[in-house]
Amino acid sequence: MTTYAVGQSEDVERAFPTDPGAEPDRAARLACLREMHAHYLDFFVPPELSATVGEWETSPRVAEIEAAWNRYEEARVLAGPPLPGTPAEFREWYFAFAAEHEYRELCDYLRHEASILDVGMFMLAEEKVDGRFDDIIALSQIGSTGITKMTIAENFWDEMGNGDPATVHTDMFDHSADWFRTEVVAPRGVDLEILEQPETYNNAVDLLMYGLRRRYLLRGLAGIGLLEQTAPARFAATVAAGTRLGVPEHVLKYQKVHMHVDEDHGREWFEHVFVPIMERRPETVTEIAMGVAIRGNVAGEFYRRISDVAFGLG
Image 1 (cartoon, rainbow, N blue to C red):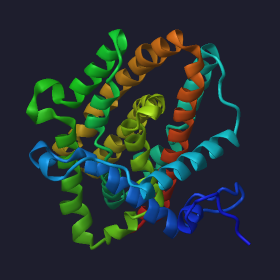
Image 2 (image 1 turned 120 degrees about the vertical axis):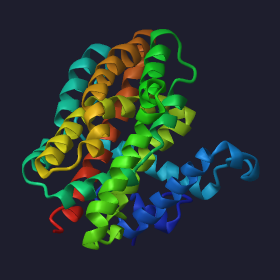
Image 3 (image 1 turned 90 degrees about the vertical axis):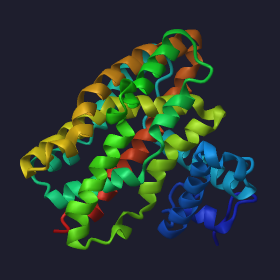
Image 4 (image 1 turned 60 degrees about the horizontal axis):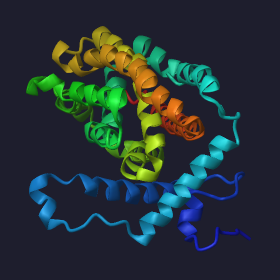
């Protein structure tokens, strides 16, 4: 007979089992993660709608899912190799971890083998996990000071195209995704329901939850840092694939910009966000490392799942 955590709903237990040997139920996991995702996106209503939506409040149901999600992801990390315990250990561990999470197999496939439909599906999968990244960056600077605040502010300003409306990163990404949707994916009749995977929403809620829950700010900063550190390899591979396949230059503008911008961001985030925090409070290394490791698990599962279900369709 299955034993559930005290007070935990049956479907939440199936989605995020307390038994470390139990496999999550994919349907329950997808449903729970969709609930979390919808709740977080409600926070980001445009200003003109803000007076009509009421207070952003977390229901007991969403709080239950959040708690189970956190417990499950933490347990997965703690079941693996030990996390660093000091700032000195963190530096070596972090860069080794990031190097392992550039997803070289995925990048090699994109560079050398992917069809234009593969690239299109990859872009639309990335679009589906849009975590309001520019807004998350803006939220992440709250409470910071000095070089840390300036580094996050510079990152945000880059996301805003350094003040040029034509190069706002979100708009460039939307342009790229829209081209692949209309010119590549739609004409081939692919059902985009194939992207409705638990791993898709898990990837989306990671940065959203950690960005919106003050208790987990260090994990949010950690996840952003790992993303910035590892993303250039995927952008470079996407550009190489697009160039090989004859994708128009304007469609690849977002990826080309991020090949270099995120490389700078990754280095600066480590030196000017992680290091100052750990210098002031060395004990924060454990929480930062937990955020890095959870992000690595979540993103890795997403890329593997998308490779399995969305590549090779034609």
